[in-house]
Image (cartoon, rainbow, N blue to C red; front, side):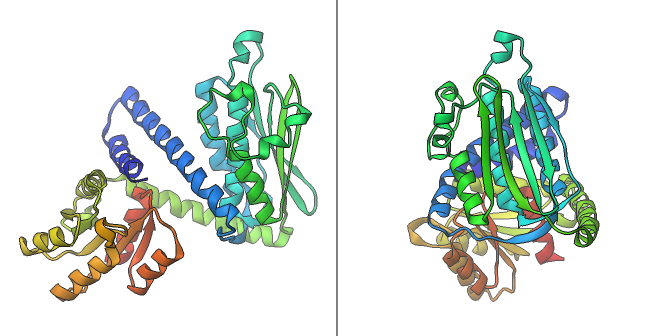
Length: 370
């Protein structure tokens, strides 16, 4: 994940600096491509976690709109580029589920629909490719459906498509590993939800998932909280996109990472915000950097896994002890294991998972330095 994480940070900076519609669009396309590659790698990790039952389930009440609106925006932009007509029917209903995991399932349904529709059939038959994100309601259930008018799936293959690495012949040229539906089925099983598929060859396919619905009284409270959260998120994003935020001017950061590309990317991002950055890649270079300057860091940011079996938590603790500093620290890693998180927590440092996103990093730094 290291090079993709670095590229993601570079692209984030690029998007804030470029001017003109063409360059802005190019930066956004680069960012989209990186997201696809990250998703492929994440699929492999995710299927492993699901098979080993190590995925934590965190169910809560939330408005289904909070989940579907970002997906609608994401896939509206994507389908516009591919000539697919995308439409959606949202709902103000409230459901009880693990929001993150449910989003993954519906996102997989939509991605699958795009793959099926984007097969040049419109050029061959003058048929407009279409995708519909729809909702059906009962008193106890919300059913989210994703329809497409692609080539359809034969009845004999409708079970096979949920197996790992299973891809239909007409989709061989589409990038991917064939894990999306396998992941969706495993998630649904963990959540105790029901997935169904209906398809007719030559006409299209519908994937759907049923989610428990919350009663009307609780729904009103949750919707109000959702609106407040949306306003706060919008404010934070606007603040993050301002690369000249005065809060970070002259803040001294000691940055430690054994990967040169990642070190450069993180340092560039921090400098762009106005920080003064000291960089190191191991314990020796860290000691040398500290000894060569009179500056005391306001915060230390370190990768967990370093060379030669060293780790960022122990390195930071050693530096704090030697210099007698009282400095907060953030540890970041692509390894989300409990042992890494516990080691970080025991040292009273904050943990940030890779790929590091600018908004998340800025939030944590503000939290520690305010």
